[in-house]
Length: 570
Image (tube, rainbow, N blue to C red; front, side, top):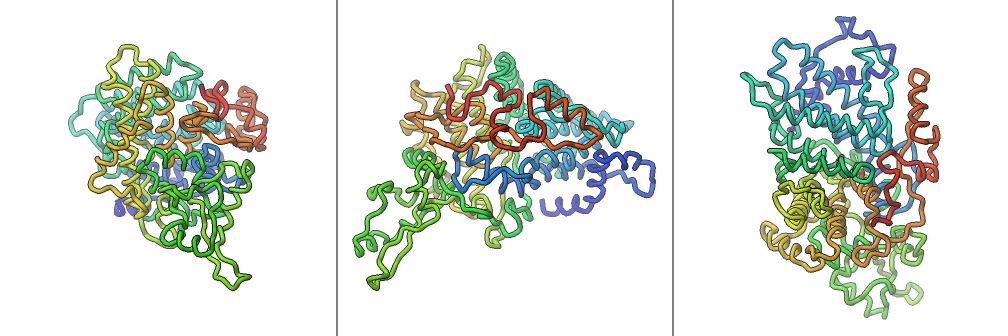
């Protein structure tokens, strides 16, 4: 992998040239200069795009996932920060670093006299385009898609903004096209990317699996606005001979030894420390979830703390149960204003002792931070690895379990019950999170052997197993827990379902007084395409240039318009 990364880094200036040429009209004729133009190897164009789909997220992890999306979903709690211009890096990255190179791959293939040998290589570009494009439209609504990045080849510097409904239809058509191309019989001397394909090393069956899982992602987004299409997509995926991602081995994994999600020093605490919310901690502890030590660090109530408390006659704050066997794990309010007394312990230690009496004072920090090493393996100069798993088998399983539970199969063979897929999803989630922790050299689940004993105990826990009473909610909550590493998917899940649900007896969302944006904003692109931009905003009912959260909380993208408010799922 390291050797491969160095290979395509050497052609970085060429790729950047391709990526930027379509964005500035002055560069429209750049192909006319033989001294400038080169023909980059399409293998490394793919490598670069795959790499950038992950590594651009350095700033996104800090400013977007940790400071915004994971707070809104209540996976973590921290000091609130206003949304700034640092969010929405996904938009620029898609048009600058990903899509131009995918289009160049297609252009080169189509120009070949032996292009039949390259059709599966071409198919992969559609899957990647959709994978990244969905993420961009999720927070932006209408975006340039069918006419995007045509400046270099067609001198179209004013691409239309595809309405989200049409855009998702296009994505589905592209995925179907890719699946058909990848499923076709091999031709003589068929070409591949080989190991230049960072995700799958040109394993076409795995690419089909990813394409089908992406179809499920789209189906979940369409469920409320086009329920019939949601069911149709689900049934298509289940009837496909290859199907969706079918094992942990089919997940989209990426590891670049030089990549740090939080910068070179791994400063995950930039601007503030992040902690467990009371709700997620209560649930993980109550069900003895193996992911608890992976997700969150222990507080200071370990070792001889009881002796110190006894020595000075100190009593822990009322929100902590002294008899709790997992007392070393504590969460606090998702919205600090709802319980300022408890929230004070996020920033202040519990002090034992009295300096006025000449005693030594011992400080105990009571709140459990997120497992910083799990997210930032290069924290404090460490050299461990950030394993990104961008599309998981667990996500696939939970979609299937959800749709079966809702009765969307329509007689199609689902190759198992909702409970079967639910168990597969939980198992994969736990094992994958543990694998990420091992790569990061952070705290793991602490399995005695391969984890099967601990996982089976979890699956049979009455508080986890489906019981015929609140099965859909249980499927939802496991989806929610699995998205702890994917901020965008976590936010989309909570936004589309309204879960975790306020007042739930199973897993209740906490009261959150802060206004939550439902989308981001798109900056004015300038005179060359302002008319299309303005029309797209008008068609969606968006206020031009509005970046205030109250406005962003009311003006929703197309598939979100009739979704429940946060915490108000059915």
